[in-house]
Image (cartoon, rainbow, N blue to C red; front, side, top):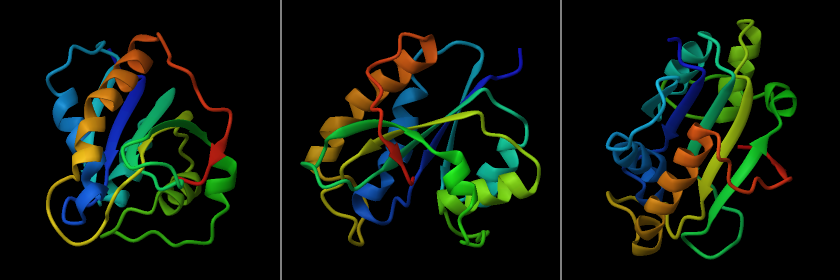
Length: 165
């Protein structure tokens, strides 16, 4: 069966809480998910994500540290505005992860990420260093739960806000 949902962990493990998405993917590797769900750790490899999205998915779930001004460890579930992201002037960087540049490249290549959801976590710090802060580490199980419910179709509450990923 062709995967219909891509769950993509993104972030830089060398910048503290920015490694949140990578840590959530590690935990999801131990969770039973439907056959139509593919999980992957993209880290900072935006070009790799863009090319994988060319395979076509109904839904893409990005997991990332997302500063929005709340308490560290706060989990967000947002729907990204792909039209807005693909209009970005940011150029793709083969060695970086800028989601707006990824979606711009995907659009230029004629691809479609389907519906794009973001499971974000408010970081405490993105300073140099390996490892998550205590608050963000404590939020990993909640993010796993949210992604698992999305994958099985028992969707948790989705914020009506749009976000620039």
